[in-house]
Image (cartoon, rainbow, N blue to C red):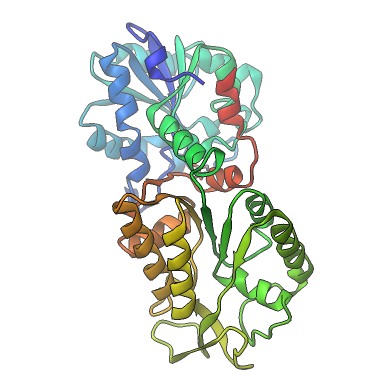
Length: 394
Ligand code: 3PG
């Protein structure tokens, strides 16, 4: 794929797909990370003499015009992040879009309305892609976090204009390649979260690629059940035990070491500050539930991290939203942060909950790379081709 360095943007209208699908409460953006991350791309386009015209989706309006999902509501946060005037166009195609583009002056940025207001967007409709392409001279995709969608603005349009990856897309792809494509070994993956059933493809792909797989969170309970261990009232998908056993067998055949909890923190109630105790992983009382990994498990994880050269992390190790059941996630995250800072570890993390957990542990800033992607990060970890990335390959 090409980058902005390969493109002549001087005097060109640069249709730039970004992901500014940010959380919003009462009309106020509550986390502007995704907006801040596209600033380098927009500035580079401007410094190369191009006019950035941003294409983006917001929420899931399902092909209808839903005023609460208008991107005009994101425009003020975009202006703040860019420190520039943003001209808003109330449609992403046609005369309205053309007029907005024409009215933007030097150093200004155009933001077009939610692409998903058109039913053709999610269908990757060729006509809609052509209407978008008609607005500009070149196409830049900076929306890695929407690249798992084969939509008109993420995939179709890339075949109609000279296309390149933006700076954030470039950084995401390089980081992911370094983590799973051609990584420094040993590689350790941490996979946590509630359910095995939502991460089956991911676990199946990882056991064939990484040297160590740390399994945490609710899904670890399902693996304990698969090994014949009683987990009391813990969250566990008992009907997934056979599948979990298959993953364990596949890992063994591939030489991937699986690390399950050795000890666990159990409680009788799922609430912050609940009375709790630490027991061996095979000694969960019948009336208790496992809410976190214990200190012996954290020590083993720290040892594995210490020997690894690459870490890829998705999902918390325990019920990190409620204290004190965030302890294992915090301790492991901080260890990873220290090792990364010391230069011994390349650490990459992604997925909504994961980033929240690493932020809570004050560890995210020290990771080598934190992906802006949720679903796209998971699909990439599953080894799937992302249509938005594939379309940039030509
Ligand atoms: C995301 O928030 O992960 C992306 O913006 C994609 O959104 P979607 O899941 O609605 O396609």
